[in-house]
Amino acid sequence: MDHSDTLSALLISRIHVRLGAMSVSIMPGESEEDQIRLLGDESSFRAERRDGTLFVTQKPRSRAQTLSIVLPLSWKGALDVATLRGGISVFRVSGTDFRFRSLTGAIRTSDLVCMTLHMSTLTGKTDGNALSADRCLIRTLTGGMLLTACDFLSARLRALRTRAEMDLSGTCTPLSLCCLMGSATVYVPFSLAHASVRSVRGQLVTDGVFPAPGAPRITMTSVTANLQLICSLDEQAATFEEE
Figure (cartoon, one colour):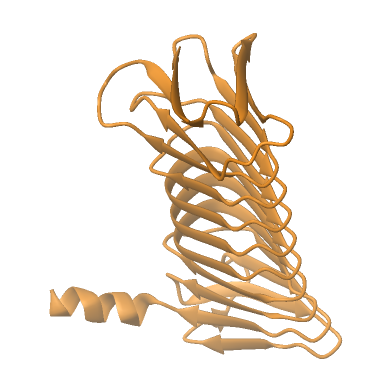
């Protein structure tokens, strides 16, 4: 049976979610009301507020598939979400510290603004668009990683056995990558970079990006993976001229 729980958001600064096979989506509502709404099967989850934290857990033997958390437009707290097999989707949310983890589920994020962002999977895919954070750590073992229009002050990417692709909209330094047996492609909005690769067989490949000491620092550790740096300034200029 579908169920909706409503809780006052005034005393909640952190949301802590632990689920098994259930998927969770988090997004803002359309009104200015100071309420957090939990939408899902009433027998599938348990919600409890303690000391400013809202704890949401999946009940044992639950067969529910999804849980939705609708936040007030003005909410600016911390999110700590973890699943075993369920997917995690978070859209149009601003806050402090965001942490999303899943073993095999996919993580999809868009239009997030926060101080720290941590996303981690084993085999699930990680997709992110329009992400802004002071510090970012994104890790996966074999899941794909695609990040577009990202604005990080500093970032670390760990994609051990897969392909990672990131499009930066601002200067990110330092940017540290580890892709042991996959590959990494980074689109950057600048033409000078202090880039290096430590690898057995991998190498640095650049397109419109030239080495310069003191420029934004980009490093990668790999076994066989290449790091490809591509300057996106020409593409941005072409788009501007068309408009």
